[in-house]
Image 1 (cartoon, protein in one colour):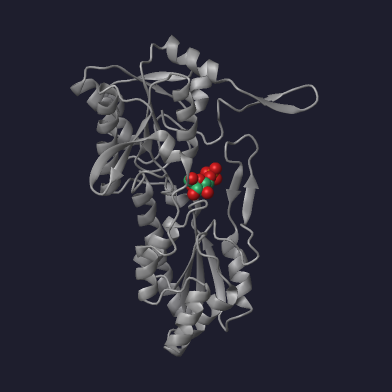
Image 2 (cartoon, protein in one colour; image 1 turned 120 degrees about the vertical axis):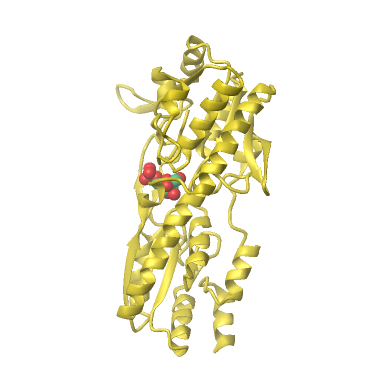
Length: 365
Ligand code: F6P
């Protein structure tokens, strides 16, 4: 099954699972539809090698997905109020009706947390980490991140020429939830001048100082790359929408506009903002994600054959490993503000809008 937000590479992982199950191990595969909703409503289809032929390059998931359904927290409308009940037994009954021996869950931290709880109820589970946010612990990379990074980097590249021609400040808001991986890496790879991420609190004065410093060097434009989860100087995140009943009801979005407005009062340039949004989740997976998906899919099947249960396949350096799902979902993988990537970005003059950036700007003055 595929669960949570879609991303490029899910289909490639499904293909690898089905092909290795059929060709290598002689197993039958059933696909459940629309994430955990399919397990609750018993929506499934058999998956043979013909069903996964030609999907390697397709974005999204042929099984469908959902980031709203949690079998341990199903909404029920009572006569007076809405309550939530645990329907995980329905999932167990569905699995047993289909004669399922083990469940492979291609999901992010929310879906893998649900998978882990099903594992505690006796379902043999193997997880495959996927999320453009790259915030699952225990693995260096999650499936889909590289593809999203490539789209985000291209957006930074494309903003350069229009920003330079009009002498403007362009603010680009990227996804990532509460982690700054996409903004940090697209910012570095695309040569963004300012990078704002949730892990490094920023102040507008420091961002403006960085932009004005560039003016002194003759650069009459700047690109500001901001993660949707970056916190305003007041400490608030900007919320786009609350989706009740979703395991993670908060949908972030809107900080790009807030920053553009605030900077407009501090710098002598026009400021525009762009929200890249779901474009980061669409399209064909990069060659790296196709490789990773294939490696993860084959490794997940092997883990089940080895009798492993409750593990997640993971990328460790260039090796595929297994880690307990519990370890992977116990905490979010965040950007280390003192880590190598932030340090190299600072070394080449990237502004993070914090005190350190401010003193670096003053030193460069
Ligand atoms: O987790 C993936 C992700 O794309 C986040 O980066 C983003 O905050 C969220 O999903 C958006 O969710 P939805 O598709 O429900 O708007």
